[in-house]
Amino acid sequence: MSSRLRWTALATAAAAFGAVGSASAATGDWGPPPPQNPATAANGVATMHGDSASSDTTPYAGPGTGPVGSSRTALASACPTVVIGSDGYPVTLCTTIFGETPTVHLLDPHSGADLASLALAKGNLFGGVYTYLDNDNELVVVDGNDDLLRIGHHRQADGDWELTVDQSLSLASAIPSGDSVVGLSPGWDGKVWFATQGGVVGTADTTTGTVRTLDLPAGEQIDNSISTVPGYTAVATDHALYLLIEAPDGTPRVDWRAGYDRGPGRKPGQLSWGTGATPSFFGPGNGTEYVTITDNAAPHEDLLVYTTAGVPAPAGSATPSAPAQVCSTPVLTQYAESGTEDAVIASGRSVFVTDTYGYPYPALPSGAPASVPSSASFQGGLTRVDVNAAGNGCSVVWNDEVASAALPRLSLGDDRIYTVTASGPMGLAGSDTFAAYHYAVVDPATGALESSSLLGIGLLDNPLQMTGTTGPDGTLYQGTETGVLAIRPSS
Image 1: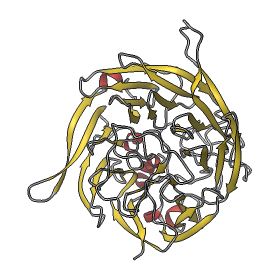
Image 2 (image 1 turned 90 degrees about the horizontal axis):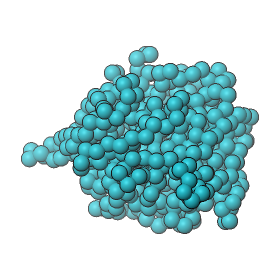
Image 3 (image 1 turned 30 degrees about the horizontal axis):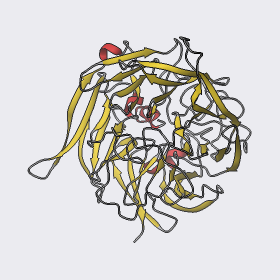
Image 4 (image 1 turned 30 degrees about the vertical axis):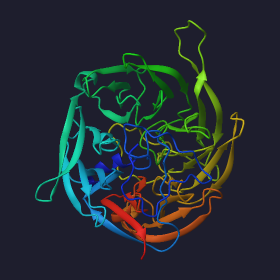
């Protein structure tokens, strides 16, 4: 059993679609969406967090509040990332139960059948989590050999599908021995930004082969992905949030650094000591005015919001800008203690934070410190925080106790939050055997649970705090401990 469990630590971890179906690109009361990155597939389906800004929003309406049905693609793998190209075919990056091998799968959008697969060189487990789909429907990922790959899917003359490495660039000379890439995101100029667990941030020009890097301060570790919007890249270490810019030759530069309270230790329900969140850009104007993460303060974590612009350094100064903080707001205070391993949902002036405190991950990354406290029961819950109209403060709008077992996604197409909730025994054994998992819809205006439908019981349906991806036809693809669920309205 232990060999099956170790791999699950990873799970925390301007194309137009040909068929729009019932989906809508309207923004309703939430938004605007972040700008469409020209180097990725369409917003909402390009990355684990939907887009390169990591907003965890989608322009597409989900399955809704009526009756739903689900089908499962069994892959014997945890599948934290499902992305969808302009041809409508879902591509998922998974890690196998046995062998912990990162594997790319191409799925049939109608039946869910596994049409083709490609195993990658094994490395850091978080390398099997963070990836993106580019504007040519190629999956961009770094394998265990430190090769930056573009993986395409192609139909053969006999009608069968094949996944192939269409481009490869070695990053080995830029990555120290024993280190590995954990985060990827493209800049607006087409360069690929990457970040390693050891604190190296770089850009790779896959046309020229040029790689430029920046070393963040020694002793700071990166455990989440990175986010990009025009002119900026955000990176969070286990000590600070960094906003980076690009020098004329492509070398990353620190625009500003904001340290945060990393708390007394790793909390139960987290995989590392520090923020559990990939940085998210958002804003009511162009979707990029603010950048946010959660800290790891005790007993309650804080939502930290900054303006991307920062405070400019004095003219002629060689020092970077200073961060301009909008707010530091305690969240998930409906419980005695709180914490999260999830990125936030961020859209318009609103941010939604999920509580993963006590969530029973079956295994932890190598080298993870003991949790403080040593154990806790999973409680779940969400908090909505709004930035005020003046942009100089934040306030909590609501807290709820929806026990989200997945990272929720806000639909800008139908103004609903979609997730999977858990009930029943949520200890380490119970979450894989007796816990019940439900498709759930939450009203972002009030936090009320609008509908709930049983998906299943035990590990086959355990989403392990992975996020779902809504396709243009309204299908919600949810990665689980053993494959991918496709959730659709019942006919």
